[in-house]
Amino acid sequence: MAENTRSAEFLNKVYQNAQMASESIAIVAQKVQDKNLLSDLNTQHQQYTAITSKATTELSNENELPKEKSAMAQTMTWGGIQMNTMFDKSPDHIAEMMIQGSTMGIIDMTRTLKQYSDVPQNIKALGYELVTVEENNVQRMKNYLG
Image 1 (tube, rainbow, N blue to C red):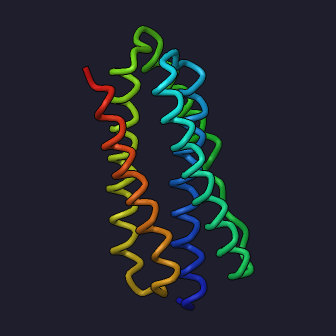
Image 2 (image 1 turned 120 degrees about the vertical axis):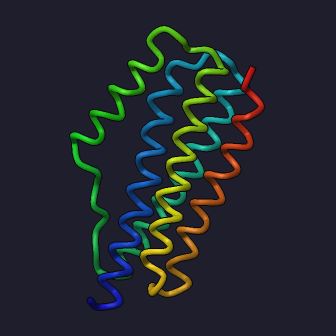
């Protein structure tokens, strides 16, 4: 497989991971009453949006467009958040949900980095940046656990 195809596949995985995080935060933020938590979520949203933007730029450099997650995956994410926050919108519960989401993101991107170890370092750097953002967000959300 051509190197630029592998790079595009990798960048799409970064894009989809960050995009899903960004969309999830947008849904969760509507349910948050705590001003500090909302501020932290907005910061996270900006970080994920910046990564999706960088991935889009890199994909453009590869003459590719980002591939969106399926409508089914997006619907399942929305439904899962609605169900999870129906009876408990406390900062503790929201933080737990965010920690779980970030942990899944760390696992997914770490696997992706290993599977695409052959892509150029400047491309992989975006994956490492996403892992770092996820790890920092887990630490930040721990402050809200009761």
